[in-house]
Image (cartoon, rainbow, N blue to C red; front, side, top):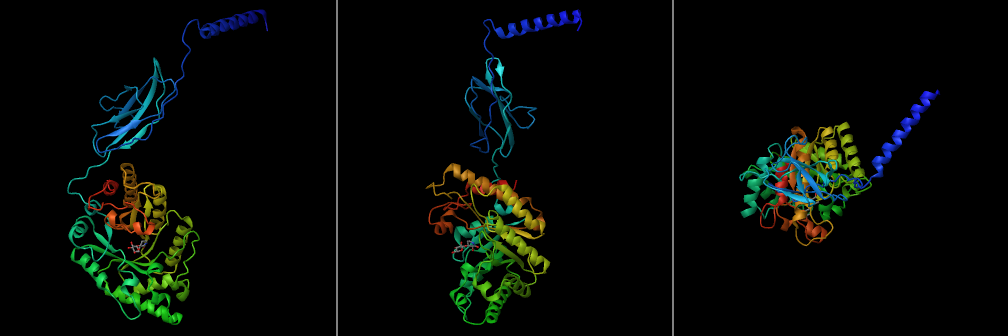
Length: 451
Ligand code: XIL
């Protein structure tokens, strides 16, 4: 290195040292504050005209700047919400339009120091339907069903069914223990009343269910004849019922809940014991022989949360398709909870029905608001959580191609009459109407799901 270069470098280093010591030596200037970025929370208390925005406290922040916009890019702002200065950690945003998307973000401030933006939160205000809107009008590409009982087809039941629903399912009166109570008797009284009600009022009737281990009459459980005689008896029963309602009942859950939880094995019901592993296929063929047009469904529960069961059912369906055994659709019962299962899992399982080009029935929807038995009345928070789940279910259903749609059926009309009270032995509010026929948040969630 020559002398000139050496001297130049020494001067440069000297200069640099003096510059850094000046700027950090500080004299009496304040130490610089580093402000973290706030985290914006999901909106809460969402109504048709307002929501609450909130965010996390940032260490040393003295205030926050809130932006609210109708567009995700914040090209424009809601009046008063272009960097609105706030000391609090939340703000009620009011005077909004219903069913509109809004976005918000915040910055933290200390004197002249301002943080970067938080994450952006997206929220949609609730939707207010027209006063003459109903479930069946809103769902114009599929039936909206309800489980009914023959003794409750009058008065306000009748009014609500005719106004809101386009399909009915017998909650228990079209099961074998009711329709074929003993070896040589059939009792079609209640079933006829339900089917006639549908016919008279132009309401679709879904048949439920020909074969179910839980509605097997004792005489069938204790059947004394040979296996062939058992199978002949089942064929005669199926043929008799399906023929009776031919042209009146659009669809049948032919075999209900045949697959065990967890293992994916076939339940060892009396039907399987007597007719062999292929009993389901045989029953489907009996139905098809009696009515070439009726839709044949396989119906079961927990198929979304029990992957083994789901896989077993689709393996069975694929086997039927490969062997030309008639099957037209799959029913997911949809006895679910306000916080479970996730929408993505409902969607994934539903897509498997659509991929096989079969019809989808969400056949027994009820959404538990009290799955952990921690409330004694339906709280506002739980009611909204239930509404959000109903909305998700409807959104998934509505998103499938129209050709794959059939019906979305709710398992009962009023909370006060849900089967779940007996089933779990404590109170819940899983339906769309309260005990006084009032529409609940969940009802509006159904309508919002169709927006
Ligand atoms: C229930 C009914 O709601 C009750 O009234 C009846 O006592 C028992 O059955 N899965 C089904 C439905 O497929 O048939 C069941 O309905 C609920 C579980």
